[in-house]
Image (cartoon, rainbow, N blue to C red):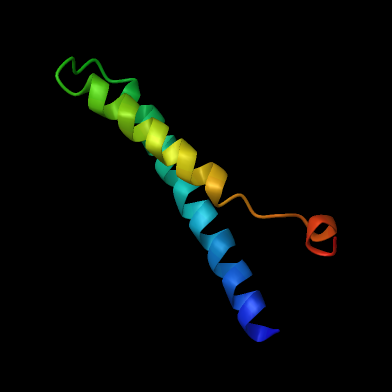
Length: 64
């Protein structure tokens, strides 16, 4: 049971970190650097995908 809780805590931590990273990537996309604009958009897309993969499940979904 403890390992399951540790894994859930790590997933929540990862999700929070990625949420902050996505906010930073959004900020980068707002810059007017033409040379890096495409890279910033790509980075934002990758982080958004990882964020979806680490979405913590709710308590009701865990018991199902």
